[in-house]
Length: 82
Image (cartoon, rainbow, N blue to C red):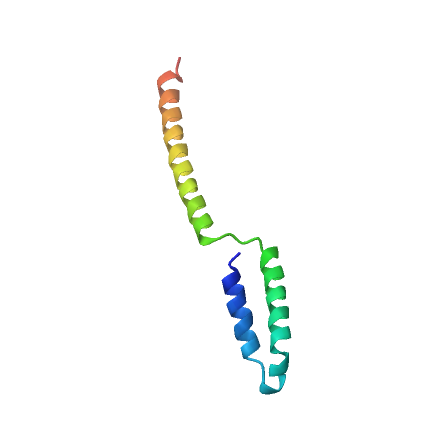
């Protein structure tokens, strides 16, 4: 979880408060931060690095599967009639 993103977003939202509510800014910022963090954690998100790593694993797995399917078809053609 990128806490810097959550900190920045909660700070921006708190800064957007009307002038009359600026005295509550720190409390609002803290509450927004807590809510954002809790909600984002429930989404079970992954980082871009994790996503990219899994994409590479999937590509290698697909290539291996295609290779095995080709070999299986060759073996079936070679020994299937016997």
